[in-house]
Image (cartoon, rainbow, N blue to C red; front, top):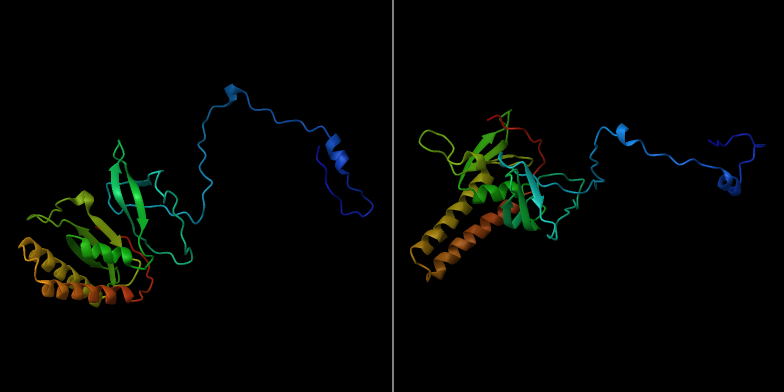
Length: 229
């Protein structure tokens, strides 16, 4: 029975005792033969929850181990959307190979362009590609390089970054400077030249200076474009 409230002042609403006296019929479940379809429910989801994605084509899903402190990642600044970087100390593949599972996940500093900068600095080989209108750097392709036939050495693990922050030639020069002085340090270590602290101190200072200027630059937001390979 449905009870509606009228706008007429002379109409009196039923008291609470009246509601208690009403015999509401319980909804009976459907018969088993009528249940012909299974529906998998998903949710509820928090709008602030972050989902991790991989930039490699061969990885479809990224999962975080349930024992990790950061099993559920929340966006602390939802008004400013840009790519963020998370690192894990342990990575394993699921049995079917369709996903990777991360353990001991840590969030890197929430800086616009941080993901692209770290990728450019530590990638073995990097190719920079312009945006469609050729007014800015739009994409970065990172990997192990290519062979004599210009075929990727390990193409399924190549990373394609569609930039959501502005970078210019000066930024690329600083990235190359950091890579150069890091290589010089490793070169001296390979030769066993570990006693010359003045040389290592000079290299470290150069790396720190370029890092500082690279990260203190305030980068403007730009629209991401998909790269046509």
